[in-house]
Amino acid sequence: MVAEPADLVILGGSIEPIAAPANPRHDAVAIGGGRIAAIGASGDLRGLIGPATEVVELHGETVLPGFQDAHIHPIEGGLLVDRCDLHALADADAYLEAIRTYADAHPEREWVTGSGWSLPAFAGGEPDRALLDRAVGGRPAMLESNDGHVAWVSTRGLELAGIEDATPDPPDGHIVRDASGAATGTLHDGAIYLVSRLLPPPSHEDLVRGLLAAQADLHALGITAWQDAHVEAAELAAYREAAADGRLTARVEAALWWDRSGGLEQIEWLDEARASASVPGCLRAGSVKLMLDGILESRTAFMTAPYAGREERGSPFIEPDLLRQAVIELDRRGFSCHFHAIGDGAVRLALDSVGAARTANGRTGGRHHVAHIEVIHPDDIGRFATLDVTANMQPLWAVDDDQMRDLRIPVLGEARRAWQFPFGSLARAGARLAAGSDWTVSSADPLREIEVAVRRVAPETRDAAPFLPDERLSLDPAVAAFTIGSAFVNHLDAETGTIEVGKLADLAILDRDLRSPEAGPIGDVRVRATYVGGRAVA
Image (cartoon, rainbow, N blue to C red):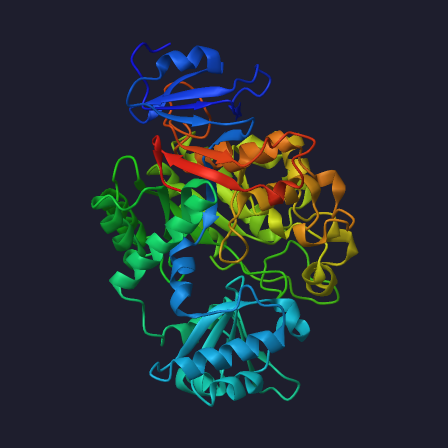
């Protein structure tokens, strides 16, 4: 017990230490010098209150380590304030009205851009350019889907990009065509770049503003740290500026983007970027994002066996031998590999590459993790623990909704339906779980995500049957995934992720006792306050 007065004392709460849930629960925590100074009973910690101590009196509300998002796109989210944002809208008619309103309000912009439309809003998840042409008055336009893997492009946008009916598909994407062979205006994955390369890039100032706007929103959700899952040179420069002048109050692990058009030569740039971005306490760039495949809905996810009723099974976005060499070298240099892997073939490819690195290098400082884990072959479940690869889950997608019924299961087939989002199986097999939102693809609210991880039912349809109920998690591992599990892949677990004496005082105070029978649905719980290093940020 420290003797000097604390800077902050929180009394009367339900302190969730995470690290040792079987230990007796305390109701008070004291902070000094930005760190946890003491944990105990309110009566004992009142002795640490001095004239300058800030005191927060609670009435049983839960105090958690700050949430950490292990896979998120915050700058992109912050930039949406100046683009056509469709995320909160319900259907195609609402999208078209919003696009029309945005286009009319911004006649000076060469391109109409934005994102957020949902695949189930259109037949087959593939909107037609004619609809968009009418909404934008013949202007060039590109609106990405909420998952970022599909783009809706106007006729003028296709023309400027040189996309014609005979234009070949890139190796990592599709130009969707109708029965006559005409390009419809829907582009999948790598084909999006044919148009996106023409868009005016955001300025450095725009990126910094987007980062700070997103940071405020994420702090309000109790998020104190995150891993940005796609960081190129421009985004890294924005992070560096905000970190250098103190405006970056979150703790950020930047996952540097692996350029699929390049090879091993880019590792030298990654090394230089890592060295330039190290700002102790708030910014680190020790991870590399490797995009291995696309998504199930467009059949660009890489599978171990063909899609239902088809001969193709998708293709890996990075040639397997190059991937193996890259992962071995990145691992040797101490980078953590952050794999995007949707299909079971991509998951296996990620695990195989890490296995090759373990054989070549032994155990290094790399904390490799596979994001999305949407479909995993049963033979690969146990390999996560064996290879010490973290399973990075996005729980909000593990529900029986229109997208699941209309777009996913038809391409998977019933036999593979049960292979989806196997959180419970991974936990039972000893895998470490981390968690993230993939915002702006879905909500960044960790409490909504925890509810789905526990119930496997969408918060919007709470009386529905759970999706694959055997894969549900109990509350403790679900909360741990959003705290200490994500702290591990963010290289922050020695300092954050649990409430322990000596650790940094990154905390989230909820508006109720999360474990109370009267608490109501987890997703309805709100964050009352957020602290980073003992300082209130929300």
